[in-house]
Image (cartoon, rainbow, N blue to C red; front, side, top):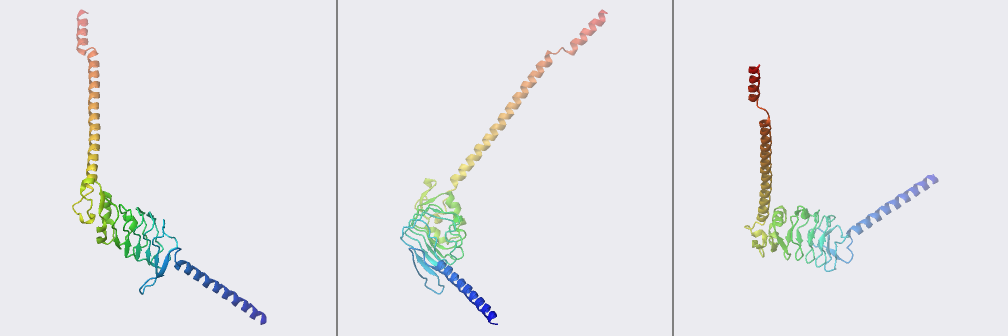
Length: 266
């Protein structure tokens, strides 16, 4: 009995230590996932939904922090030096409702830049960056209200084609005011592109495509005509040679007259 009690005691101690280690590991992982990113300031978000508000404003950041707590609801990355948003930059932030990227140097939003935020994001601030066009593949169904003002938008056929494929709140797109355009004389400069319904910046591209098709068709037509001319001339030359050859042969009538003369003489 004493031996059995000792074994049971040791077994209980081992199980308790394992359970304690598991609890500690869980707490460590939870702390790592919910602790504030280095150099940033975190606070609890207001309201009944919980989560964190994380402020990383004006820190000279050149890339998105990698240790953002996954319970972050509001993330402020404004007034930094970000130049691009890579794919899956916010993929592990399922609760994020507000994202401020204004006053950076953003010129490129890679495909999948906001992947994973379509179901949660409510406000996206991209104001005062260096964005010239939008790629629908960067947003992947985001319907958030957005601030797109203060960017050097280049209004061309690419942007005109992209706008219908964006799910952003429609009035957000009024912030796209053309700074440059293609063609330059389209009259788009200084105009909110969404409201300029009479602008069609794909006309030049369509005309260029039509001209290219006409040139291609003319080239094929010229090749066909050239082949036909060559074919006819070649056949005419063969026919002429054949005719000259036939003329050079002794005629059958001459042979018949010669045979009749010989028969008479005989």
